[in-house]
Length: 92
Image 1 (cartoon, rainbow, N blue to C red):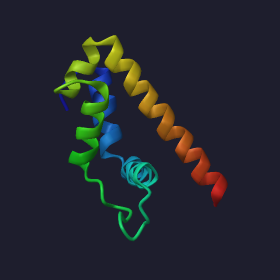
Image 2: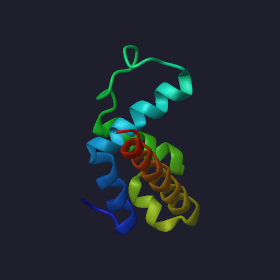
Image 3: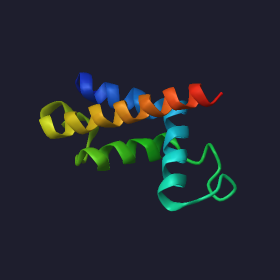
């Protein structure tokens, strides 16, 4: 992996299968879709990378290390994902 600490953090997040399940769930909720319409496992590593770059407003994850705004958005993405994980554990 190239890039600084934040770029690596973004890359590891996108490679996490649980984060990609979060993206599946997030999209279902946003568009009112059922699991049959958007099944778990729909988001790929590339989709996750695209989501992170788009949300952070960068063309490359390496840019996150040089932008306070992008770094703040990555922090928010991580916090939202961690909140989702806690809710998943409580629902079990």
